[in-house]
Length: 350
Image (cartoon, rainbow, N blue to C red; front, side, top):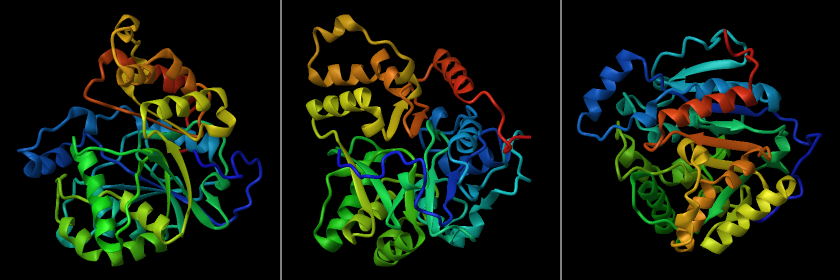
């Protein structure tokens, strides 16, 4: 992993405002469900994609506990808000899709399209953080974790991917888009955690790739020709408008090495943690490890108690995302874990 000198600062040297943006969907909103079904009747809808495990509630608790310096929190949504949310909180702002998206993109149930217009949020800070609701802070963090010398610190994983699902295909679309314009390609993929962007960077990128982004702006639901927001990060890297930190997981050996040094030297290397709910709480079948190759060993290490130990080393940023493999037992353990980490209500709750 490439490192920066501002790893774990107690005092921040960056004093300009930084806001945080979430996308949110209330999966119990019947009006939202009915409208989405008009566009997604032919899609294989995964329950886990929209299941509400109160991730946003725990994420907001983590903000108040570990990153109280965040100025404003914007929740971008086209559904109703959860009953527990204190929408009167002075730092909290709900932004409807109609505020930032073009009229002909509405209604939109496609996060890839919505993310292309986050820089249009009225009043948003120049440098801002973006998170899914299943992402949270796991340790005290200062603005210097995200910004150095007034530039955003972009964190990515060094790895290649194959077009095996929609998520990977749209990342590859972004790679191709950059290559077609600049004949430049990066063997980097998103670290799937809390990211930092600049409004001017996204705006410049959107203008540069206007044709490509407009071509998928009418995709009300996910399509294979979507472009992932990683394009904005590639653009920041290409234009030298950011600082880059990478985790090298380009081979099984390098991935094991990366996990190992995060585990044994978390203060230096444990920027973030990423797991599915099922993988975090699943115990490995050790007997099978004896008969499988290195790829299986690496995968099962991720699902093992050793990986769980990594989580309890308190990464700055964490993501525990729902998946199709998630069981009721997993969900129960997830709730118990989050209540243990964040037992106190935040001021963002009623």
